[in-house]
Length: 320
Image (cartoon, rainbow, N blue to C red; front, side, top):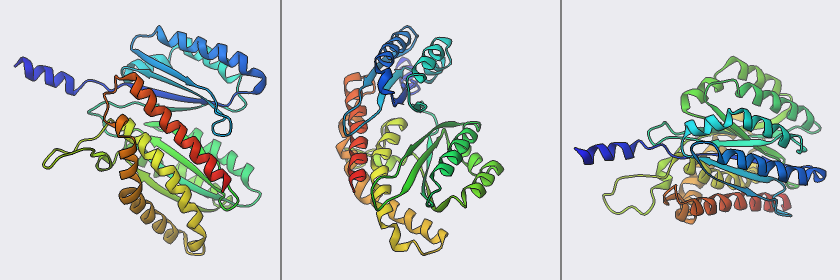
């Protein structure tokens, strides 16, 4: 009886929640930013449930932003920290040091929670329409944030002479919340505004996809995977270069109708991710995906590996 109770409690132990913030600091504000970042780290340490933090400095030629990673032992502890007046006050001082608004990615889920879901959009912006597109994106993100379950929107600028597609990754807590946004009248109105701004748009959905992470299983072993937030980061690590590579092939079917373009892009993405990219990514990140989440050194190494890898991909595609 005692053993069963222990197993039940362990099975429902919340997974740590992680917040990753990226900051593009003004050159004349670097000293002030460093002092303020130290202050917000010290403030976070005083909150119940604090697990750890890392601050990654820019890497010349690879990563222009500072990256701050905060981890708390549960979703509730993270929410208390994010909603606290202490954090809000210091965060305002950080924003004053930046050349553009900060970007934050929240990774929060429990073992028994429904996995988060993301929608990946690629937009080929029409010539001389970049400013209009950026204004439209800000409006779209503001609208998305008002819908239940919204987590974050990450975006990647186009790089290279032969590729001018913008990549947006919109994340919601579950499929129902994402569908509510995707089917909303507000989004349909935004799409009408977007139509004269872009030449083409591709979209596909990304979920937990636990089968990609069934690592080191023997015959007859149950299918299992790492926490949902680790799966999401690993998928992002694989998805970004996949989408970028496919964007170079887009001219081959650019003259086809939009629904056919979408179908071809989705088929190729699924094929590449399932049989080529994800098996290698899951093997490469195996040391981190299957490790206990409370091993903070291993967690930091895994997060740094993904951040450095994404930065390297940006440099490579920028040079193409």
